[in-house]
Length: 200
Length: 200
Image (cartoon, rainbow over all chains, first blue to last red; front, side):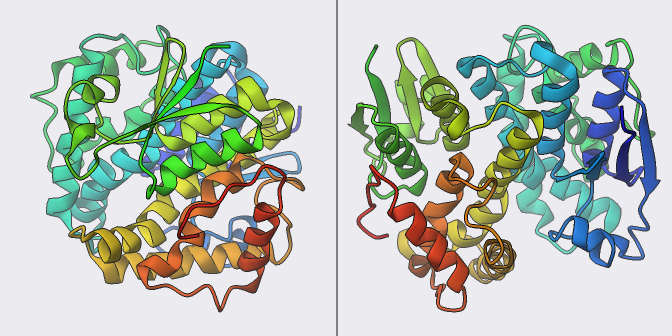
């Protein structure tokens, strides 16, 4: 097997998702730290690998992928089998619907609030916190009735959604009102091979 | 085969994606128009089918799905086979990475600009148009070198991304500077079974 490589930022929840799934799958992953503050992801050679100018960027032999959710799909499909991303239409669609929550509601909610508070990004932090409370409320109601987001077992839906929810406090949001979410995060933390982010 | 059903709004590009893929796949789809202005999607019984309070909502027998991108995955996986969503890890991840562009950059760009201009949504239209120009530029560069977004053939990546790009003029954005995008839209319009949106 060719070495797996991640162009990585330790503080990025999107990079952490990839590190976490690799660890849960028992895959060796080479980390190439990116000088994010120096803008290395917006310059050559990284900009040729990902014209969107973002990290993570993932390499497996000659394959180069952008977008953390797409990288999770690749890892699950190639190395994780049926367990992390089912191949039946209904199961796959259910997982994908939660990948979309990670890309949309969570990114524009708790992630944006954290980008503002922790990294000084210029964006509407009040709007981000309003959006965060909406998606946290929806997730709380769902997780009060389900152990994991998409299926009755952990899938990449959980790996995609957990990091920025778990980091909500760095965007001024408490998880105190969301006991089912906290229990769910605990279930993920208890998975064999779990690794933490420093702030989580 | 149980009847496929879409809770539908004729002016929604997200609903149109589902109608379009069904037509391309030769699937019969029952349309249940939603009283969007009356807020029917935020009330019972639709809110029980999709707690996010959004359309499209899709039904296939007892299966109920939310999120247009997830519905495309379901249809491709169940009825479209390898052609519209490949099952190999690299191909699937490439398609998914563009589904994420539909959910993120296109939704927050041309779609938001249209929501503001055409439907009076209160959002930052200048920011939406700035984001739109960024993603249109990235897509133009990509499509100058590729016939379709993810693979050398049409996939659900194209079906997911095309509608709100093709509707960009309704958000005050011209596609005149983007010849490769216009040629790509033409390729999709030429597919057997293509159906149009009135405004497209």
